[in-house]
Length: 182
Image (cartoon, rainbow, N blue to C red; front, side):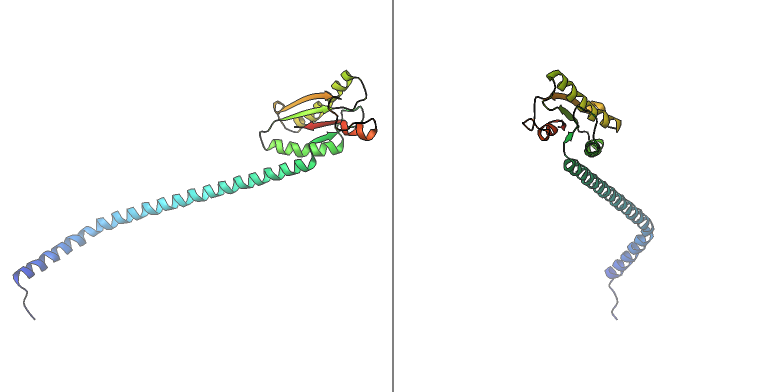
């Protein structure tokens, strides 16, 4: 085996001393690395929690939107015209069911509506305007009684002025005795 030259011995000693110094400093480096790793893991965990919360919120919003769409579909299926009996401003059972569908939509949104009261051609103009108003108010009062704020509902009367069916038969008159939701 060959003897190391003096420069090689010096390099070996220097390397050994640096190794010892490095090893003695590893404890502080290890704890600093451990803290950095813990901080990184905490940041990753927090980011994962935020992502999970955002995903849950997005799912909740999607579910709410789907529910709102179902309510709107049910309301449109029920129709936006509510019919009344002759000389009456009382809601029929069928009209109540249709209005209930619209109430559900209004309770889950901030929409406002206009209720337009109509009558058939029988009676004086003044009487029919008053009857159309009573019909629109009956629908409005039913909505308010079921939780819809009154400031979101406008009720007006057209009386006999805007018929949808022309003629002088019960079939035509029954189509004109209505409240339209707009």
